Image 1 (cartoon, rainbow over the protein chains, first blue to last red):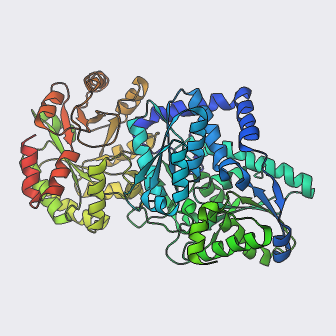
Image 2: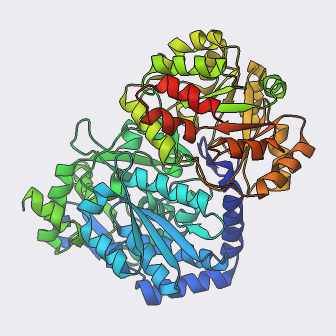
Image 3: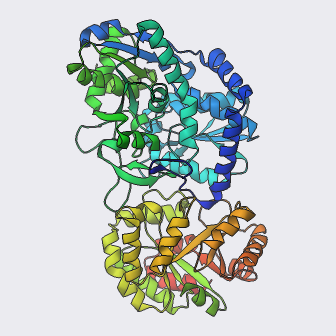
Length: 383
Length: 249
């Protein structure tokens, strides 16, 4: 069926939105079949985002762990994370579709900043929905969005985090569907979003593959990325999906006990925000509150393609808790002079476990964003 | 028989009630008085943690019902009492996830056995053919929504996989009372009536007797949800308030 990855995916949306999804799918298809579209996309990637992002050999970290660790430096992109790749791709679509207003949801604020940035670049009106809980813990990104001319709409319903911001963005879209483009930031939501987001994030995997072949003369043994909704992970996985390379997604294990955001690890299939995928829910199908120290991973669902890759066994999903992520944050600062986003620190944190029985292996880690935004949180926990 | 019940009324008003608000016992009382007061059918809303098609009032109602301890088991234990307390057809309105959690077919079969005659699902998947088939097989009506944005081709497809009545959504947007309704709804309803013999009822945004009158000039019925739930939530006597609010429509 259309828009499914096995039993996952689909379009579970109010009837009002179906024509908009069809229009979007049509625009996406015609754009991606058009070399001109990709030329424009690639030009912005190079001259505005600063791509290709480097693949850095993490020498001291490698020595410390006894593996060869390579970092895909999405933290060096303009706006400080991989989110800009997708935001740029989708804004070019919005332009082709003549939409004057763009809305987005954001958790950590990275996608909100990326969306506000491309809206400023193209002169489009922008509203970003953000949970009040996240506004509190990601103040700096809120101010950045406002500076960029976006309206930040506080969402206080439910748990007041990314999940609720997403629901509110969908409600706005249903109401203003004629004029508004909904720029989803993760590989979630109804078809065609999970596919579209993957296609715009795929540039990470394509570059990383070329770079490791050039620098190491071989493919890596494993590719590791953190997974909330899963856009950075699906982007880097896409470059290696046909290779004999292990793909590892790292979910947020929160307090390492009951409060976490590990949808694949502990969830069951369910429907949220228009897509069927693994979901943290109770026995009545009520969606559970999640917890992670990283706002960007604090989401009860996951992109449907990840659920599919997990059930087919093509990718493996594992857990890193708040404490391990904080340790990894400090470690990467001390050994490599790099402050990773707390989201990406989960991927770094996994290397310790991985190295235990993979000595000498070559690993590419997607360093999906930089950690300046998280200093406040990290300092609260103590250096 | 939902379609017949709507056709039998001169003034078919279908109230919507969030289950479990202020508690499940009171919901039963509200359903009984609404049935006695002449509701054409009654929609029972299953609270959901993430009601993306609902405006502030029904979001709040959902949230409060869940806070007050609503469970599916609690609901199921009451449905047969409710359905035998009124002669009015009862319809369940639920998002997909609570219906799917313990198996879609089992959940629907359970509700049918307890006397529920139809179901409305605001986030039904785009390809609803299979679900329509399951409902038909079980002898339950699948009431489909048609939006202001729904194109002619899709209208045909939807009404051909719909029973009970066609739910014409009056506005682009979420549920919730509105001062005025767009005039396009009339054309929409008239177009739908050329495509189906089912009753066509209008919902979203209806909040007073004047709007009910306006809609019934061309539609077969109206659904009133947020307006009723707002009054119920504000009241210290929810049962009496439900009855009085309904009577004024």
